[in-house]
Amino acid sequence: MDNNAASWRDFLDHAELSDVGLRRSNNQDSLGTVICTSEDAWSRRGHLFMVADGMGAHAAGELASKMAVDTILLTYYKLPDASPSDAFRKAVEEANAKINARGSANPDFKGMGTTTSALAVLPQGAIVAHVGDSRCYRLRGNRLEQLSADHSLVWEMMAASRITERDLPTYIPKNVITRSLGPNPAVQVDLEGPFPLLPGDTFLLCSDGLTGQVSDEEIGLVLQALPPNEAAQALVDLANLRGGPDNITVVIVRVQAAPAASRRSGPIDASGNHAAGAGRPIHPAFWIVCGVAVLAAAALFVSDQPLFAGVSAVVAVLTLGIALLTKAGTVEGDAADNVALSALGRGPYRSYVCTANAAIVDRLKGLVESIRQSAVEQRWQIDWSKAEVFLERADTAAQMQDYLLAVRELCRGISFLMQEARQQRARTAG
Image 1: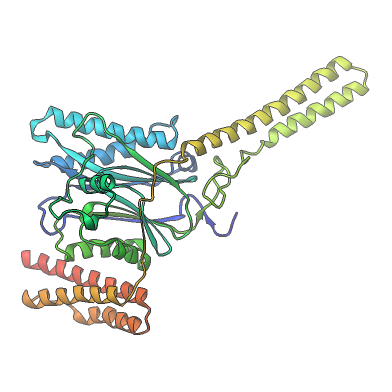
Image 2: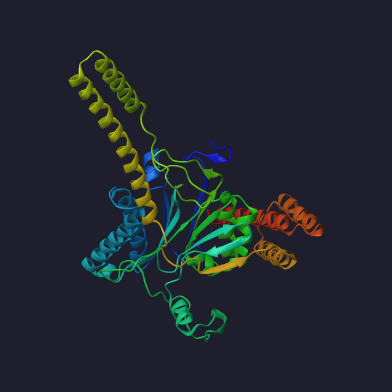
């Protein structure tokens, strides 16, 4: 095995976090994760991650997002005869049908809907299924790519007019989506990929509660600077520091090492696809039976028993033929899987080079100062000595122009202070 490869069980690190935000009374976002429990499941369907952002009054949005997660996670793995991409599409369509039926049956849930952005990580690479304006990103090195297209009025107008978001009239609402699960009996599902997996690749699924408050540049830097569990918390904290007007949900998936070749799917080349001509090796039992039949045919022929020698020779030929057909069938099956995962969608749709600099560091320091001011005004009891450790490390890193390290320490300091603030509020409320 390649020393740089990891097993299908442990080549990924992932983290998930959902937060109600600061202005909503309930959380209408949902998230879901399925890590395969067998190598066969990994080979056929891979690991699955998703977020959904619900819409509707009377808890309808909360119900819609939960139904989407539950249905997609279950249905995707219950379609063994479909290719992964077909199973993905059918799972999302099934979720849409169920949400639509529930909304049509109950006046309180009429018009209920949800966005969804889901990521399947397979031996062939990663594929994305997407409806709405929840997003999927990939960070590779310092380049952040948006793998999904927003199904929103803003994006539709930009595409039609061939202009940038900066050039749009200010009166165009940014929160109007043009496609979601539930309101209509049928839905168009976008599929993207496959995106090859390389060590260090980091995928982010998120609701617009994050992207509405945290810039793509900041998202890319946080993903670079921190491991997934800390990055998830830091992104949520940054969105809340900007006002937290919406629910915030993030799922982060990092490729720690190249996944080792699957026994079913064969070796994976540098592009993340299966190597040509690679199939399941011929089982030793075929060679044993074939060898015994050949030796028997030779012995019987020497013993002047041509009829039995001929029968043994036929057995040898048939055994060899069956072995070769079995191997060929495996290769053809793997090739079919590769075809099913090729040329999906048009992503990535946006690309950003995210490089830490003094301006970003100063921006994060400003957020720390805003927490300090709130603490003074509201007389919070915060352990500033621990916070100062992070801030001093950030200052030292910035002086050495190691701005990414400064970003890391400032994000850790912000998350520490936000945790202190949450505990302070809890004590006050109690």
